[in-house]
Length: 182
View (cartoon, rainbow, N blue to C red):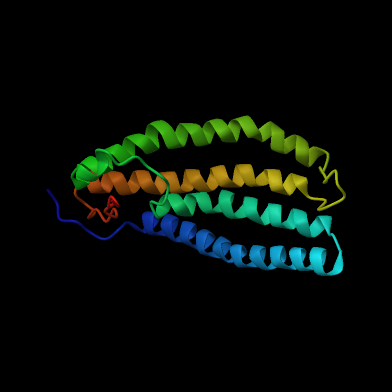
């Protein structure tokens, strides 16, 4: 058994990329709150309605969730059922995560990416616009589907690398301990 070492440059780079996207997109939540507040004030104080502003909140909301999914995966923030997982050793958890990434995450990401490609392409072909006269970039919103899949695939590759290194005792397991709240 070799002693644990530092993360390889590729893994650090992939994680850093995911972190940059995640922390950047997190700022969008503040902007989204401010725009929503402005919408409410405009509507109830001045009786002004803006379809573009209303749709912009929807676009920002979609961007936060879709572009933040890979960051949440990296931070181990997705919901999981920890009936047995928390009792496993570091290598056992790494095996579970490796199998989950190989047999669930990557196939589902590829299935969604392949299945949605024509949907996004047709939206781009007609430069799809809002039917309500709002933001003229529905095709950009739909493109987030493919961007989300690409980001999840990138983070999935990072997860695979990390789990293999943990299994081979080349990386310490720093998986957060999940505590059960009573």
